[in-house]
Amino acid sequence: MDEHRHRYVHGRSHRESERLHYQASGLADLLHGDTRYLPGTRVLEAACGVGAQTLILAKNSPAAGFVSLDISPESLALAEERIRAEGVKNVTFCQGDVYCLPFRKESFDHIFVCFLLEHLENPLLALEKMRGLLKEGGTITVIEGDHGSALFYPDSRDAHRVIDCLVDIQRQMGGNAMIGRELRHLLLDAGFSKIAVSPRQVYADSSQPESIEGVRNIFIAMVEGVEDQALAGNLVDAETWERGILDLYRTTEKGGTFSYTFFKAVAGKGQRMP
Amino acid sequence: MDEHRHRYVHGRSHRESERLHYQASGLADLLHGDTRYLPGTRVLEAACGVGAQTLILAKNSPAAGFVSLDISPESLALAEERIRAEGVKNVTFCQGDVYCLPFRKESFDHIFVCFLLEHLENPLLALEKMRGLLKEGGTITVIEGDHGSALFYPDSRDAHRVIDCLVDIQRQMGGNAMIGRELRHLLLDAGFSKIAVSPRQVYADSSQPESIEGVRNIFIAMVEGVEDQALAGNLVDAETWERGILDLYRTTEKGGTFSYTFFKAVAGKGQRMP
Image 1 (spheres, each protein chain N blue to C red):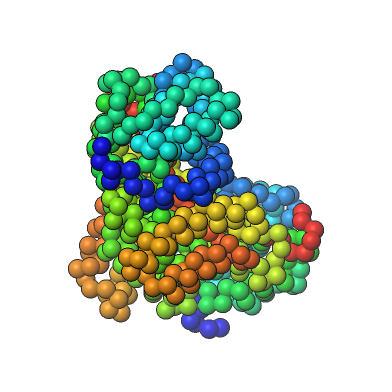
Image 2: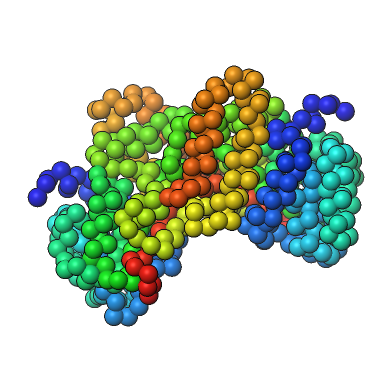
């Protein structure tokens, strides 16, 4: 197995695991509230990570059967532990590579992908492979962010610089942090039909303390996570980095505003839709 | 009266008037669907232009009384004609300047402002003046766009360049085409309380022909409207301009994606809220 594929721009530290759980719980309704699978359907969650989304999916569709796959055994162990702790029974975990999925053709009714494509060198190939695993009439649901959507006040060149560091590092690792806007195009090219994309925008200002905490603990923490790489790679100097991060925090203070857009796409295989 | 204040980045041509009407009808529900005024309340619409929003407001709250003000007699004439043609009776038109409003203190229950602040050199002063016209417990509703929110696929440096031309020209005229994100801060500084801001995002791809037409006839047409000024001011060369506009249209074709965010704020005067 190619060790390179284990690399993950956000790392797999404890803080990152907590961040992902926080992210999932804070955004759960906005991103996943309208995803429900019928009893008896078989759903592949491709790249479940530490199970942040798995928990929500499995609870929202308790009579569907989930197979949640990830390439990292460490992440899978954390995911399994969390799912067990919550008493959720309808998930089977499986280690594997999204480019080389260990399943029979047309063996799933639905596939669910969240925050995966942004990290792949070849998201189109992954989608084509997944399409092969879907039954005729099945659906794929894809959710990705787009760092180009970050809109804030006070605006700040330095804040954009530090976000761009994350985008650049993710690109160097083969990913694309601005993939949200591309979902329709990718799904079209991968042969899916009846593609419906909807943007899901989060907005925070100081009148909404929980949303503000979300911006700090999810988005800003994610940017802060690449500080060492950004400085080591000379993508930015230390002073600019510090100002940029401070300016990002400034958007979460009084009079500040922060918004970000996720894109959710649902598409079908074949003409029949369930 | 300062003639400079009559200047308007989008011009007041017939096409512009049609564009504004189209804009209002296409976005009416998203932007105005949740604005309703109680019977008997007196509402100031500050800067009604050609009446694009006036019509929606007055129809949605047929028992409220509207005073719709604009600085341009030509725009007012068009607005009045349109309102009359639709048989709407609850609007009085009035010519005047938003910095020097011809009304008694505390004479309105509510004030409504849409696509105005982005054109003003001193939006804070205008908001302070308006606050003076509100009764205690009254509300102000402000809706503005933010051209920094335009997010599209395929992404294109030239497309961003032509959008930046509009932003630059509007700035040269004293305005701010990226004011949407500032609404909370401006309303705070103007002394309003209980400020609630919500972003309203429009999204279009080729699966939604009406939304695609909206992008072409509203957003792209608006950018195209400053071509002569952009070229005359050497903000961009003709080839880049042409490529940028073509690239914007490209986002409305197959596989393309376009999104844009408006910001709507509702704020109160004093502690009592109606």
